View 1 (cartoon, rainbow, N blue to C red):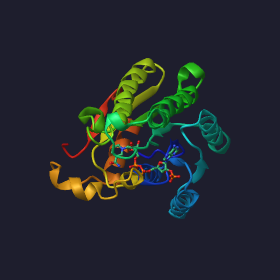
View 2: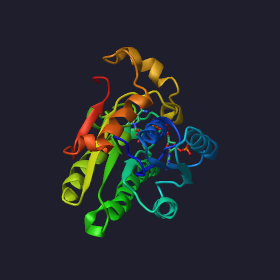
View 3: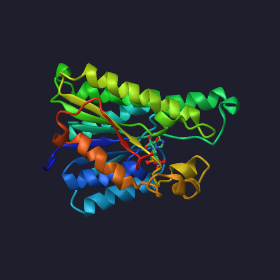
View 4: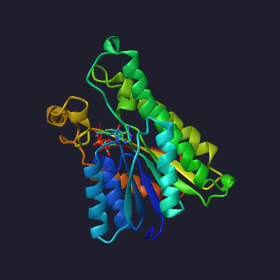
Length: 251
Ligand code: NAP
């Protein structure tokens, strides 16, 4: 079924899993709002790609670690499209491999500010626009958790794993809170996915090092995660809310 005219906002939508969601979302008929943090060239290139394939998209810069930026991102969607039907709470970070006994308060505060507080504030803004309680027409939200939420990521980034555990709990709670207001809230838990996030966290060879230990002996692709996200956003998942779907190749 086409999602024609519907508007989809993806935080961190310019690269990795978010960019795959934008490409598949455009093919499904959504008009796209693509948020990014700093790499304007990558965001602009994706907007051009989507438009040249006949879709509609714009890029909006903003750090989900800043409440002022989050407000500006959602206001840009209001100004450009005047509606919001689907939201993917995708932007998230890892940090350098470290044990908990090596972690600084500054690291932990940044991790929780971007991955947890930022995601909850973004969802707040989405709910204000979608909820029938606020005069909206409903919508669908998908949060990005991680297999790390269940595995704990010992010796790598327990702080990141804990931030995604918070996303799991938030997903269940928000789903129940807005279940009668036309909004479904779900999450995906990707396993090891081949994107730039590992290099950004200082482990560019993480996929190569770990893939033989994975049940399917390979990492997943951003497109494989995006497919699950598009399903959860769509009406095909109309009775699915508060669900957390593992997209982890059995990990
Ligand atoms: P990625 O390849 O590192 O993509 C990063 C995207 O997020 C870029 O668009 C980047 O913008 C944007 N971004 C980074 N920090 C931001 C911030 N503070 N505010 C707004 N945008 C920000 O990441 P990914 O691997 O696709 O991961 C996407 C999500 O999936 C994350 O929540 C991650 O935790 C989760 N996940 C990933 C994996 C995996 O193995 N890859 C596994 C489990 C869960 P710029 O281009 O401007 O930097």
